[in-house]
Length: 222
Image (cartoon, rainbow, N blue to C red; front, top):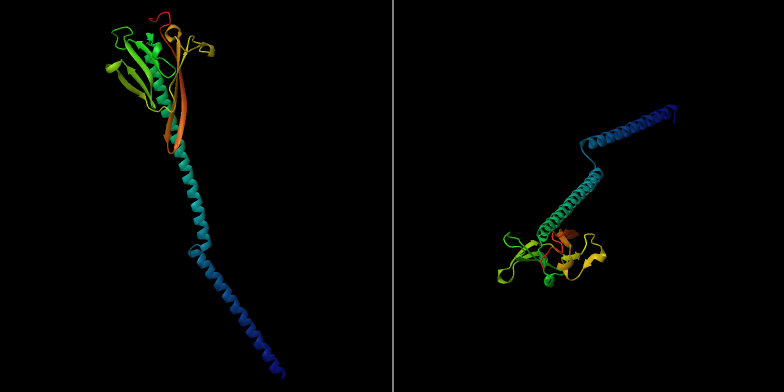
């Protein structure tokens, strides 16, 4: 092989190598451009999946917060209802009991308070009144026999209505009266145990009121 032939072969190899490098560079440039064009045209599948997952997590958290808010509001509404019913009932019972003219010893107990009072303003202590319970209702019965009229004051008791009688306003344990009410009782404590059910949950609360009878044992009829 002559020097010219070797030189020509090397030159051919150089040209071929250069052409291959240029072709490779062109392919890489094209791939990069296509990748850039693809990214400019939209999101990749991985990006879409991540975005969807984050969106779902965000929505789940938002729904949880809203649900907790509704539960909180519902609980407060139920508590407000219990407070209103309990306090209104105690106000009504206190107003009626303050006018006690004579305590009916035979029908008075820890479950009911029986007394005579002048509710129509015509005859002192002529009407017999019994405050008691029927099922979950707090009832007030006025009169006796066929003429008796019973009305419901409250309908959400979850345990027995309770009356505790005291001979002194201090209403200490030693002042509790269990018999001879008309001859010794000055103060009556009313205890209501109320319940409110909503959304599968039950809310219970106890209300108490001490009622000072206007007439003392010495002033009441015997």
